[in-house]
Amino acid sequence: MYVIAGCNGAGKTTASYSILPEMLECTQFINSDEIAKELSAQSKGIKFEATRIMLARMYALIEEGSDFAFETTLATKTFKAIIKKAKDKGYKVTLVYFWLDTPELALRRVQERVEHGGHDVPKDVVYRRYVAGMRYLSQIYIPIADYWMIIDNSNNPFKLIADGAKEELLNVYDEDVFNQIITDGKLRN
Image (cartoon, rainbow, N blue to C red; front, top):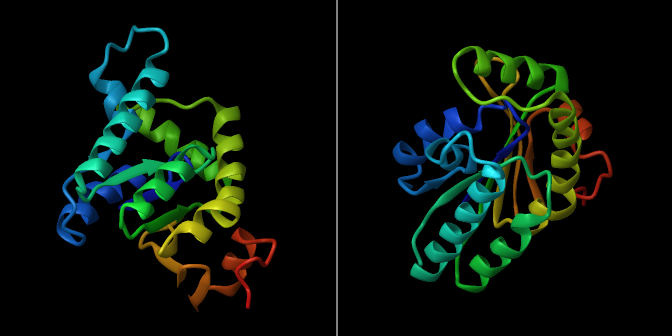
């Protein structure tokens, strides 16, 4: 199981369509935004319906034992139970977190996406998810991942910040950025 995470506008979907099939040989990619596109844009509650479909698909793939990836901002605790269920079924979980250096950059990226026909996210939601995603990254999701990496996707080319296995920190490539992301020092030995 691959968890492709990061704030809105971090480049999760773009990266997923290039790295998942080619580098990770994972062809099942679940994204609630893509599901929402397939549903009627005029429907009320479309985001909730897309999330419901996404979760049902994830549980079905876990029961089948199929390898898959999903996209999330990590701004909620929703996926903790799913990841634990997958691990109970023998899955190894790889978490890839795409970080942006400011929420303002996230807002600019979302606006660029909208200008090219993509979906919008309200400003307050972008800010909330930016902060909550980093908090839950260190408090919930890194501790339950088998392998994790944090990538700074603020500029081109992207830059690997840190990676680890379980809760162990294996490598830090940019100490300042890592400390900015993981402020409580929880991953320090």
